[in-house]
Image (cartoon, rainbow, N blue to C red):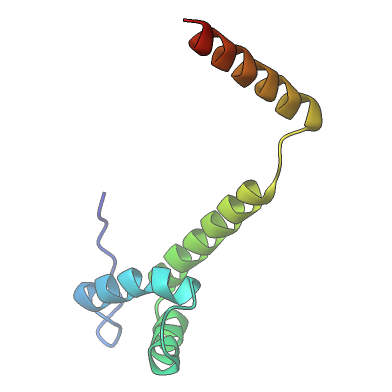
Length: 94
């Protein structure tokens, strides 16, 4: 679902944007050196469509991180443990 976007005559082209969109993931994960980070920041300051995609990626990453840090309620965890134990007993009795 690729959509073209126009940046005007002075803005970055689609090929340049595609390169930056790939780098956004590494930028969000702090996996770029300072020079590359600076380039990405400048591009995001100049390119609204890429900034929107960056914001979306950032929000998704935050939601996933928050979801991964939550733990199940104690009663659910206990029910799962009991069920696993029941399955283990059935397997050993077979």
